[in-house]
Amino acid sequence: MKYPKTTIDSEYLTMQEVMNMYRLSKPAIYSLIKRGILPQGLRLGKSRRWTLTELKEAEKALRLKEVY
Image (cartoon, rainbow, N blue to C red; front, top):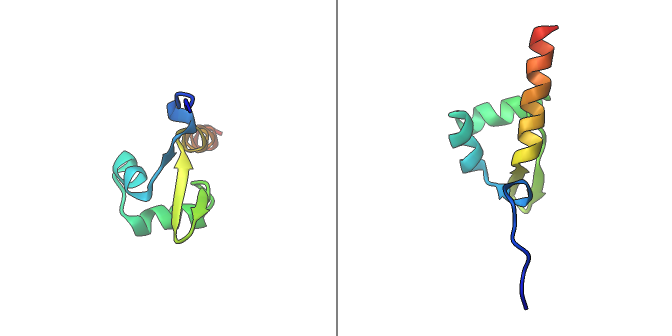
């Protein structure tokens, strides 16, 4: 069986990858989620996953709030 190629938008990022991407600690990421700045992400058991698209959309929304 052949599987379709995945794109970066369809891949899920782990907490560690998000921490590395933003250069923040785990408590800082959870603080941003609690404040509504970062999306909740997808819960898989005890872990969370995010798509790059949803994180970029949150960044764009945050930039718009800072401007206005």
